[in-house]
Image (cartoon, rainbow, N blue to C red; front, side, top):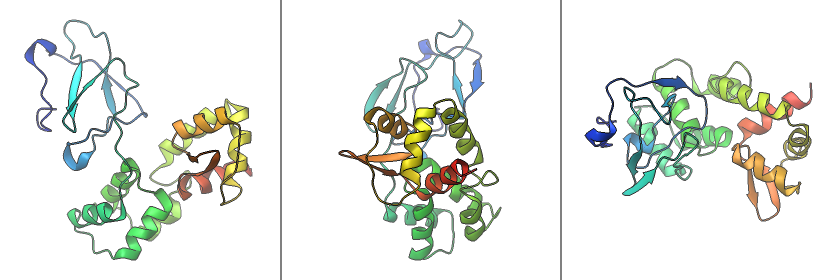
Amino acid sequence: LERLGIHIPPPEQGTRPEVGPVSAPEIVVGGAIDGVVFARQVVHGKAPGDCLLIQRIRGAGERVQFTGLGLAVELPEFTHAQVMDLVGKQSLDWGEADVAALMAMVGGHPYHIRLALYHLGQGQLTLDELLRDAPTASGIYRDRLLSQWATLEKQPELLTALQQVVNITTPVKIAPIAAYRLESMGIVYINRDDVISSCNLYQFFFRSQLSL
């Protein structure tokens, strides 16, 4: 946290953190490196005396109170220009069409974009390979997709609503509560009463799963 410029006053620090792994939600903090902090581990609330308890952080010039582990400080989606800038920082030899292809698959979601650019920047795969495998259980987003699918399988009413969304490429109307819950998972966008998949990553993956 100190390396990222996030100051924790001494009275709020313990000597030994107690942590536990989580898959979601990601904590996104404005003003950190590239504006994104990936929280693969979080500190337990109400920590014992010898543990680190994060009570507050500063992001985008504002103080954000942590009342529990479910709080996420979210950034707006990256624009095409912002993704081009990130591509340049990874020293990838990309053109406008490459950025458009990536964003067509994953949208401008900061986590999706940064995970893709990390793997591409490491030379672990090509853009074509990433796009081919992204909406499958063997791609780089498999953990997130399978976790969401496991959640949806326990809620048949959400699966029914989701099927209406992913089977077509135009906006549809579904039950408001289902729309809200799917939006909270990042799977859909809501515009007034219209609902549409937030990106091809989700549309392709869930459409495939629902057809099995």
